[in-house]
Image 1 (cartoon, rainbow, N blue to C red):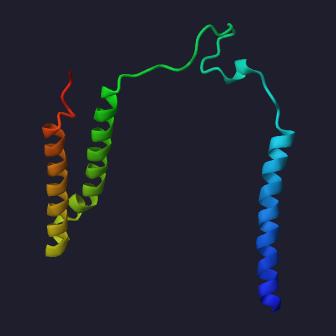
Image 2 (image 1 turned 90 degrees about the vertical axis):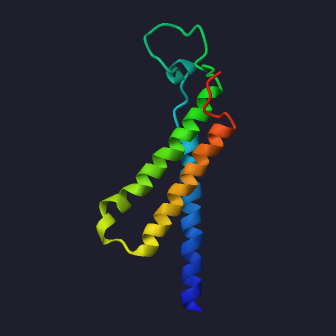
Image 3 (image 1 turned 120 degrees about the horizontal axis):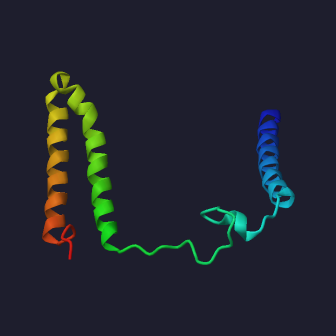
Length: 116
């Protein structure tokens, strides 16, 4: 009974401390004006917004870059230990490469990488 009580008290106190920290940070924080939140600070008043609209075509290239960049990162340990790998690991790497080639083929078929 006493062990469960101490565990419950620890959880309650930890939760109360976390909530109290968040509330204290909100109440005691310094409220600044909008100029301090500007993306560029040069001493002049702002005359426009900081939001820049990008063409959606860049998103496709960025996603494909991330996919194949992660692939390269995941293949690096296999390339370093290539001579000491067992057969099932090599089969898994080959299946992974086939999956990535299928992804690239799908991107070409759906014209994801075509710039228009």
